[in-house]
Length: 238
Image (tube, rainbow, N blue to C red; front, side):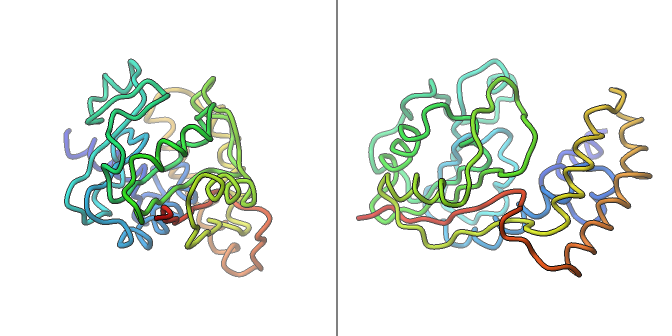
């Protein structure tokens, strides 16, 4: 039973191709995982995962120390994955405590984004590096704590304004696969609650839709104005 749970948990955030049959968000999650994995060698030393959740991407990083920070809530305390909790205002670390930071799909849940980015800047060492991801086209989630969506220009301006130099910015799934993923998200909300029913529907209906979307996304031209997520690699100015 434990192996089965581990399999499903892993396929939710680090899906292999078999994950298309169990993960309704396969297109988005696989695209995100692949780009994080490509950029992961840029992070080293002591790494802070801000908004770590269950630390789904920890294995992608070869660092000296991997520390998880999350907002103090009943859910994060129940998950017991975060090494440190904070109040949503100030990180519980001294300035210059970390060599690198990962912040994955968190910024849209932050009501005070400038203060948040400034805290990331504060706890990074000079020339420290951050990988930050945010959704662009996605439904409201983790309600009522979903506050924003960022265009590529808005995110760039926010990061540069608060003491970072952007080294790479990439849009994830800027193709027809994004539309197929949103189509699945729409119908997923109406599925019955029992897990077995959801798995059957995903395997029989959603998986072929996902695969078709991926194929058409590769065959047809990209659209850089319409995409699921974006990722930034940035360095703290000295």
